Each structure stands twice: as C-alpha cells, then as structure tokens.
Length: 233
Length: 50
Image (cartoon, rainbow over all chains, first blue to last red; front, side):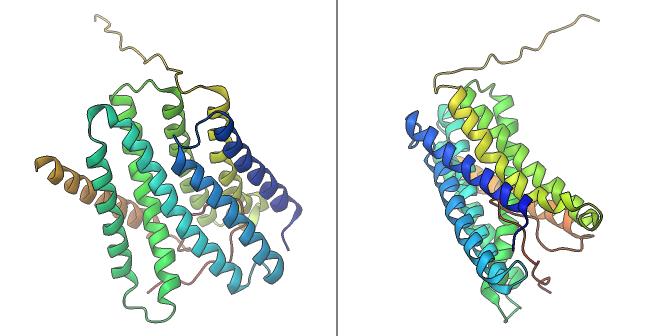
C-alpha cells in the first residue's frame, strides 16, 4: 500500500496534469501543443492504471513492475514526440521542420534497433526487457535532444515566451531525473526516506511548470533577448 | 539531398552521444533504470539484461 506522502504526491501530480490540460483547452492552446497535452493525458491515464495495480497487487509485485515499465515506455515515446514537436516549432522559421521530423523518425528507429540489438540475446521476457531498454535509451536521446534544443533557443535568440519556458522546463525535468538517479545510486534512499520520493516528485514538475506557462503567458508574449555588451579593455 | 544527409548525420550523432552518455552514467551503477514518468512510486527494479 502506498504511504501518505506517496499518495499526496500522486494527488498533486494528477491535479497538476488536469490543470495543464484544462488551461490549454481554456486558453485555446490544446491543438497548438497537442503532443504535450497528449503526453500529460497519457501520464494521467498511466498513473490511474498504476495506482489500481498498486492497490490490488502491491509495490513489490511483478504485476506492478510490468504495468509501470510498459506504461513508462509508452510515456517516454510520447515525451520524445513532444520534444520533437517543440524542436519543429523552434526551427519552423528556418524552414527546417521537415528535416527535424526526418531526423526524429531516424532517431526513433535507430534507438529501437539499438535497444533490440542489446536485448536480442535474452530469450526470456524479451518484451519486458525491450520495453525497459527502449525507454531508458529514449530517455538519454531525449536528454541530449533537449540540451541541443536549449542551445538552439539561445543561438537563434528565440523570443516566444511559452516556447522558451516549455523547453527550459523539459531541460530541468530531464536534469532533475538524472540527479535523482545519482542520489538513488549513492544508496541515500536507505538513509533518507525522502530520496525515494524524488522521482515521483519530479514527475509533478513538468505539468505544473507547463500549466503555469500556459496560464501566465499568451501565445503572443515575447521575451527580450539578452544583449551582449562589448566592453573595451 | 545534403539537408537529408545532414538530418541523417544529426540523428546518428545524437544517438551515439546519447548512448555514450548512458554508458558513462550507468557503468558504475547498481540499478538498471534511470527513466521514470508520472507520479507513481518506483517499483522493484528488474534484473540487468546480461
């Protein structure tokens, strides 16, 4: 059975997800950021399934493990498509959207092929191992892609506030997961109980930050790009 | 054509970079997963795929 803290995080995360999708619908941005909304809706759906399995079978059961990792694989693919949709919008003014999509398809196929090659020798539970491997590899691809997108936003002096804040949120989200992974590997979870709550807590961050972005800024809002000042020596 | 080749090179570059990063981070780790989506608690981790 989940503890009180885990349940509280779950409720906050679900509320944030519902808030983001509702705000997108109200502000007329649902279709504009369709893949981000799709990701949040699938995350809500996945969390409902996981919670049902968790309550029925328990945290240490293989059923919960399978439900968690299969839904995680689906969510990682959707998040990857979400990152590509943001990249496509950033490069739209350079008329490179088509090539960004081509690169994304090649990247997805390449990652799937690589993941299969890694687990191909394993005959038992190939499907589960493939789902875990693909999800993990796509996580790293998404991480690299988000940092490249971060660089492109800076280099192209992107001024669209919503777009910039959504890309920055993704970068922070991926970085925070990498940080929580490092903490879990240090075995701090045994010493400090709070460490084991970090991954679900970080899971709340993305819908909250996106919801705040959608609520606070309109599509027309622009940032003033920072200027480089030449200082004579 | 060159742009298509550029897209292919970019995809390969990102894939290689991502897998390098993964190898770097997971070589000395005692768990096999890093990713997680959603707000549900982490389950028991699956055994490494050796």
